Each structure stands twice: as C-alpha cells, then as structure tokens.
Length: 252
Image (cartoon, rainbow, N blue to C red):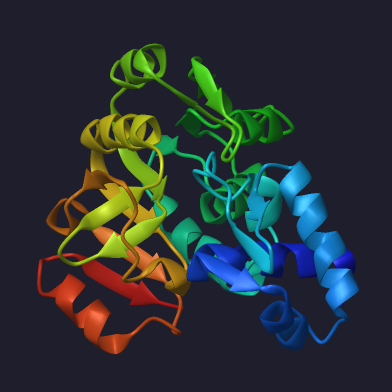
C-alpha cells in the first residue's frame, strides 16, 4: 500500500473511531509502530489529527475530511453512481450541482454533453466544466470551504436563490431516514438547501458509507428528496426506511 493511500485510510479510521492507539493502527495496516508514528506526525502537521501519548485523536479544529483525502475513497462506487445519475439528465436544460466527490465524478461526465446550463457553488466543478465550451456555467462566490471547494455564506445563498433549476444534483455527508440529508458544515448545508429548493427535482448522490450517517447540520428531510442514488453495499433496512418516506432509491 502506498503511503498516500495509507494516510487516507488512517485518517478515515481515526475519524470513525474518534481515537486509536499506535499498536492498533500498526496491526490494521501491517506496518511498524515507527511508520505509524511518522504517519500520525504528518497528519498532525496538516491539523487533521492530534497526537496523544500512545496514538491519535481527531484534531480540535477538524470539521470534515479534506477533498484530497475523500477523492480516492470508494472511487469505483462513486463512478457507478455518477453514471447512473447521468441517465436523469434527459429533458433538463438547467441543472444545479453542489460540491462533493461523488457529484464531482458526475460533473466530469458533463464534458460529453451540450446545451446544458450548469449552476454550481463548487469552484473545482466550475473550472472543470470550462473545458466544454458547449456548456453555460454559472458559479457562486463567497467563502470557500477547503474541504469541499464550495462557496458558502450569504453571497453564495443569494446567488443560488436567483436561478430556477430543472434538477439539482446534491452531495451530502450523511443520509438517514430520521435525520434526513446532513452535512458537517452548517454553511454548506444552507447553500445546498437553497439549491434544492430552487429545483423541480432533487437527486442526492451518496455512496453507501453515507447511509445511516448523521452529520451536524440538516440539508433537507428525506421526503423532500425525489431520488437517492447509492451503491448496493447500503444496509437494506436503512434503505427500506428511506423508501417508506416517499424517496425513490436506486442501487448500483
């Protein structure tokens, strides 16, 4: 396993457990204690974890995994979800696209399309779509979240509220029947919520690791989502509870 891949997985594991000891991590990743200590030192320098006497815990300033760490996780499933989402472009002329790694995979497929207008608050998505001159791209401004490269805040929300969308493709950090769709960042949740309300149809793209997860701030209730596209690793009972609320679910 390459070091970058191991760092990604160590960070995800510490986030999932809250804290872990060096021996536990060394056994998980089949490397020496010294290697784990060097990895944790690098993650601490990036303000992602805090070193403890025997291991590491989530850094006090941690809000969300940086985009560079999330991009490589569950990539096969995210690409399957993206290709399924592309099927729902038929008849749409104006679409909204949020940030997030799964939605970014979907946005990459738009380079093969023409005649679409795309409204987004994700700077990386907007810049990528400029490679296709047959698309019209409108991008929100505001404070930029480093973890998602999304513009958030009052100016972004005001910008998004001015557009009428046929379909909004929304990425979230958590999907739960009771808690709804949630994000780690409240400002990001509000921006995504504005986009959803401006759309005639809302499609949430979330891999199975998001199903059952509850993040800090609600984007919307599940009954306000027209379609959830996730992968077939998702827990059947949790998917059943979501469907019972009137949200269509497609598993890929």
